[in-house]
Image (cartoon, rainbow over all chains, first blue to last red; front, side, top):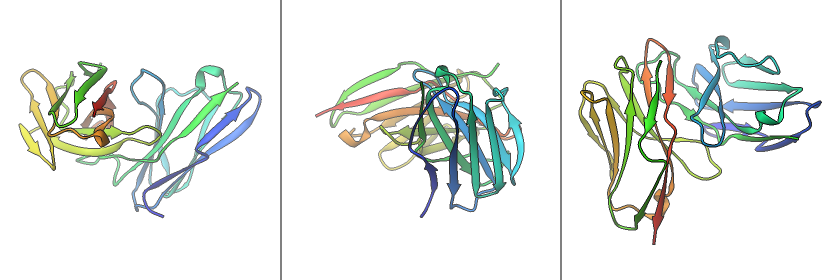
Length: 115
Length: 112
């Protein structure tokens, strides 16, 4: 496999469920990101990890809990979500954090629907 | 605060015509700009980039122009094809801030 892989591609959950999104990058990059993409809104940065250490949390509600066990894997744990959390969640990686270029490599996203 | 905006949310062109997608940014400290393409059901993909010390950069069928005086960025696609139909995002990057700020996106539709 190459690039950035996200699973599951689609997820439907109730407000009381607990689920997790998974991201794996096969590019040897050092930084990984979670973005939220809602309809008619710009991409919103949620979390940044650099060498598996969290470097940014953009005021994300605690019902979203990230985990980065190593530089290749990133999880987003979800619990007691709200319907307004329904969105496409994109994982991305970059060669380095605060790099000169900052080019991001995205996965195909996990489409989340909260009922 | 920072903001990156695109002038038009949608653009429709005839196959074979040239397309121009515009973007305005507000952070004069941004040192690197990227255009991404997002096809339906997929994540954004890098198209072309430009550093702040450049005015123009060309790729295969695409050209990015940067006007720092008016903080304006544009993406030109030559001989637009149906496969170019997608949402296009501009992003500005500040190496010190360590993150990219994305615009709203322009949906390009190519009519056969």
